Every structure is written in C-alpha cells, then in structure tokens.
Length: 134
Image 1: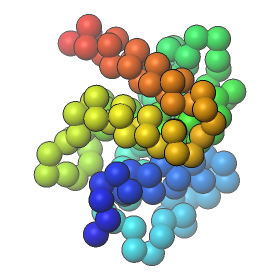
Image 2: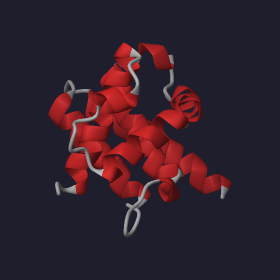
Image 3: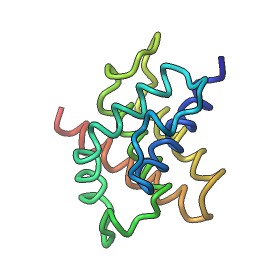
C-alpha cells in the first residue's frame, strides 16, 4: 500500500480530472486505487460547493473559476481533511496544519512557482476563520 501522501495526490489528480472532463470518478480511478483515495475524492466532490464558496471568499480578487484547476483541486482535497476529517477512513485524521502542508508540497511539485504561496494563503485564512468561529 502506498503512503498516505501518495494517496492524497492520487485523489487530487482524480478530482482534477473529474473537474476538467466531467467524467464520473469511478471511471478515473486506477484499478488498484486505495479505499482512502477513493473516499477522499468522493467526499471532496460531494462538498465541492461548500469548498468553492470558502475558496472564493478568501481568494481576494480571484473568482474560483479563474483559479488554476489543479490548484483548486489541491485546495478542495485539503479542505475536506481540514473541515471534515471524519469523512475519510483513517486510523487518525491528519491535523489541519498537516493537510495544508501536504497541499503546499503538492503545489510545489506540480504547479508554478507562485502556487504554493497562493494555496497556503487561502487554506491558512480558511483555517483561521474556522478557528475563530469555533
């Protein structure tokens, strides 16, 4: 079984492909995709409207549609683990800060040079906002 970081990245790319093509998630998973990957991708798309509203609120000067689709998918997957950790089967949920770190690392690897800061800024603002509401 692959590491959770790899499974998260696989979920990100599945959500990204779904976003771009509109194809059903079950058509996009690798045959041997882990249950964690599948659950993460499905739960993320189930909460997409909620996540897009949060991203839009905190992406000053950017509409959600203008955000690079891969960056948008990275943030959506991170938000699922940050805000709904109980929706993904895991021995112990990743802390919100860990989800942000994983998202930033994915953006560093697969996006342009400005993406990690953009992703970090939006996710951190959402976490701060959620913490003040609790």
